Structures are given as structure tokens and as C-alpha cells.
Image 1 (cartoon, helix red, strand yellow):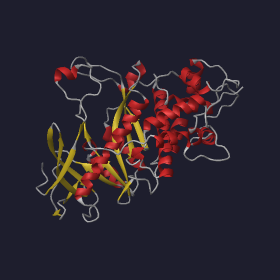
Image 2 (cartoon, helix red, strand yellow):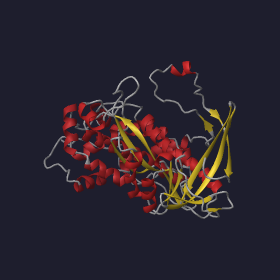
Image 3 (cartoon, one colour):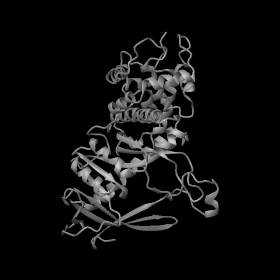
Amino acid sequence: MFAPGHLGERTRIAPFEMVDAVLAECGAVEKRIRRLPARVVVYVLLAAGLFEKCGYPAVWRKLTGALSRSSVPRVTATTLWHARCRLGTRPMRALFDLLRGPASTIRTAGARWAGMLVVAVDGTHLDVADAEAVRAKLGKGANQYTSASGYPQVLLVALVACGTRAVIDAVFGPGKPGESILGRRLTRSMQPDMLVLLDSGFATTGFLNATAASGAHFLARLSTHWKPPVLAHYPDGSLLSRIAGIEVRIAACEITITTSQGHRTGVYRLATTLLDPRQHPAFELVKLYHERWEVESTYYEIKKTMLGRHVLRSRTWPGITQEIYALLSTYQLIRIAISDVAHATGTDPDRCSFTAALNMARDQVSRAANVTAGTVIDLVGAIGRAVIDRPMPNRRLRLSPRAVKRPLSRYAHKSLKVDRRTLKATTSINILTTPISP
């Protein structure tokens, strides 16, 4: 009696042959017949990323609920725990390595700029269980009231394709080294045809040098501590300079955001290794830099839409590693499905709803629907139809004030008089030709 394992319609993207090949490569194939073969455990972990509010036994019931006519073994939480321990972390990492990538083509709308794939790097934190073994590895946060507060956190740093929000590569670990140091491992996935957008936190000597060494170009916001020399002036208002031993162009700009509540102006400096002002004008680079926020949207989809801001289930570091790779793989599977339908229908991926795709993916798992392809292959599928039937409207420029997303008190904003409304906004950009120093 064998246990069924699937991921609904998305089993076609991560088919049985792919999972079996990963297990064979990692030496994780079982040596005797078990109720929970390794392949099934992989699909249970992937499905767990869809149903974050459920424990693993509840995830198992959702996987097998539509298979009541078949001989489905009954498993317990302990059985699932032992199966996860036998599987280990290597197969889930290897599966993520097969799935990760930009999930775009040359013709995908918004994926490229000037022939280069636009990507971004940023970091975020995931809350994990407050277990003794986890605290020993990750530590805990502190505030003005206590030396240890909140849940331990894992620092996740990802390289994301801005056009599709697909994860090209990701690394995670304790937050103490810092995101710019941990993120240097992402340069293994950077290529010469990429333009990497970086926040000021990544505009460090080490990270910029590592990015330039990979052959990729970067567009980074400089913090105030950089005092680069002026080597030449260009007609578009940009300046030739040198930072971290790298020859760069620097564009200083004044950006004004206007809403019904008034306006706000800030001065920014962007440095890039694209040195030709005719092919890559400063004004176009400043407009392009806004695409860096796509990585923030990726983290929102993972942490809010998928996780619902819940703490990860695992209470050991190997279990956390296994769960994060499974979560990233599940996210990537949804993104691949969205990109496929966007390419097939000529739709901009920005108009494809991740929430609609996620809800349909959950339904497909619960119904065990479209697990294998028939004689006629449906390139769009149920997930694709759910996305294109309810396209999102064209994006409008809106402004929401930065505030603590998870305050200690849900009513604190009332006493502090913080306006949390989202307002329509207009932006004006003025390239500055004044000296570089802010």
C-alpha cells in the first residue's frame, strides 16, 4: 500500500520524474517499502507551503481528502516527523535549485531593460519557533524593555527578477553577519546580461566588488558616507566617478512626491556601471530604479499572502532549512505557472494576481485535480484561467507612509496620530548637476 503524493495541477511543473531524479541524486531514495516514500514526503512539504495555518497532519488530509476511494494509509504527526527527518534538507535544496530562475522569456513584458534582465537584491526576516536549539543558533531580538524579545528570526536574502517576481537565487541564515555579507553568495547566480538594482544597504565595497566581478551591471543608491571624486561631467547631468575601485556613473536627482496631503522632496544619488550616457540616460535610470520595489512585493507575497505572518512550524535548524526551501519552491512553482500564462496570452505579469493563483492552487491540491496531463495538453490550466479571468488593473502610483507593520499595540497609531491611508500620488524627477556631495 503506497501513499499518494501530488501537488494538484502544479505537479506538471514539478513532475514525479523530477522529484525522483532529485532523490536519486541526493541518495535519499528509501531502501525498503514504506507507507510514506520519499517522493510523497517531498510533495507533503511543498503542499505545506500552501496551507501554512495547518499542521502537517492537516496538510496530509488535504492531500488525500479527494482520494477516499483509494487505499490511503493513515499517518500520524510522529510518522510525518520521522519521514521528514529521513528525507533531510539536501533534496529540498536540490529541488529549489532546479526550479529557481527568472521564469521569463525575451518577450516577457517588463522583464528587460535595454536588453538586460532587471533583477534586485534585498533581505527580509522570517519568524521561527522560539525553541532552545533555535535560540542558540539565531539568538533573539532586543528592545528598550528587555534584552530578549519576540521570536528568533532567519535572515533571508534573495535575488529576484523584477519583471516576474520569480526567485533566481536565495540564501538564508543568522542575521548577525548582515544582509550585504550574506548576500554575496548570490553573485554566483549573477550574469553579464543582468542589471542588479541595489538599496543603499548593499552599496558596500565588498558587495559592489563582488557584483562587478560577476560581470553583471549594477544600479545602486549611495548612502551619505560615500564621497566619490568627480572625474568628468556628462550632458545628461550624470558624473563619471570611482567608488570601491570601480569606475561608475553617478546621477544625483531630486524626487518630489505630491499627494492631496502635500508634497515631500528628497535627494538621491544612484551609481551604475553603465557608463554610456547616450545608451543609458540618467533620467531613464532614475525611473528604472523604482523597479527595485518588486523584491519587496515578492517578500509580501511570501510572508503575508502565503504565510499569513505565521511563525514557521519547525523547531530545529535542519527542519527550518527544509521548510524554507520547500516554501521557496512552492512560491516559485506558482510564479512559473503565472509566467507561463502571461507568456501564452501576452499579458504583463504585473496584471496577474498572485492571490488568485494561490487560491486556485490550494483548490487543485484539495481536489487532487489535473495531476497528470491528458492527451491534449492545456498550456493555461485552471490556475492560468483563474489569473486571466480576473486581471489586476493597471498600476497606479500610490503612496503609503512607512510605519511599523506589526506594532505592539494595534491602536498605537491613533495616539501617535499616524496617517495610514494610501493616497494617490504624482512624482516629478529633477536631475541635479550640482556637486555629488549631498
